[in-house]
Image (cartoon, rainbow over all chains, first blue to last red; front, side, top):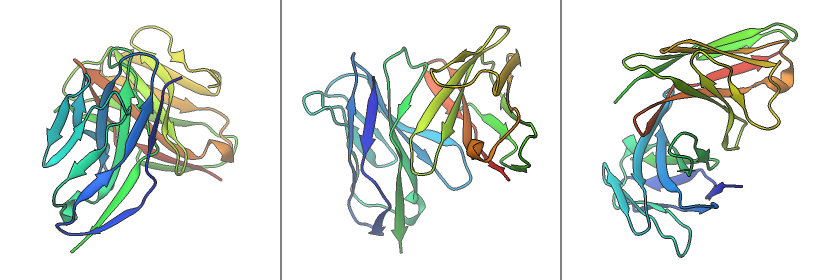
Length: 112
Length: 113
């Protein structure tokens, strides 16, 4: 079945540091890939997505590129802020966006 | 974006009792809603797909009689954990889809003592 593997956290960074959160997947078809973010006390929010190979999703300074050859969708940001502290979930969907398969989530802690 | 509201955010109940969790789409209609469960340091696992006006579709291994799902209107789905036991303690999250995008509730932390 489908699965998503992402690096375990917490990831602890200083403000303005470079961020990478690794995500790899296995899927039978050609899935769409997503990154969701969950701020403390809130629900999951879509951060960015990519629907086909070589697509790059981007939002709020975050980027991720759909790499079919390495089955990866790593999340990056050039300069993190304290307000980026949250839990980040990598996910895939190959059933018409209806259902999502999630990774375990990676907590990011950014200190001033 | 669209808003999904989940209530309560936290609940503590005694073993053997039942707990109801509500999931509402506030500014859109959702014919389909999804219920997930998350164990500590684990992924969100899809439990069931809730369909308005019909029976829910449960994922393999999820007990239908224990996790009752009702989707009586286009804006409300409920999950009732019946005869709760400590092993049911978990984080439950609902979501609803508008067009292609899924929107999530805040989650409910259930603790069974």
